Amino acid sequence: MAGMSMPPVQYDPSLNPAFAPRVVVTDVDMTIGAMCRFMVKWAIAAIPAVLILTVIWVIVAALLVGMFGGIGGALHHSL
Image (cartoon, rainbow, N blue to C red; front, side):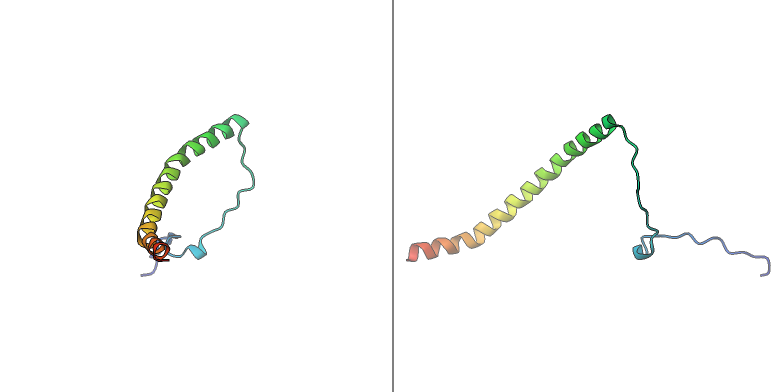
């Protein structure tokens, strides 16, 4: 037992993110051209996300109109 050493413990932040080391970014050194290319790629990547969110919104709106739209129509015609 004497002379045996334990291996170093590896920290896994997924176990408890509250104790994860903090990182602060203070400077980003990019040229204007690189930043413009990055922003264009970012904008192009956002298009599918907007389309997916639009489809989800249309489905939710259609369900709500289907469930509650008949109530409003019934009240309107009964008066």
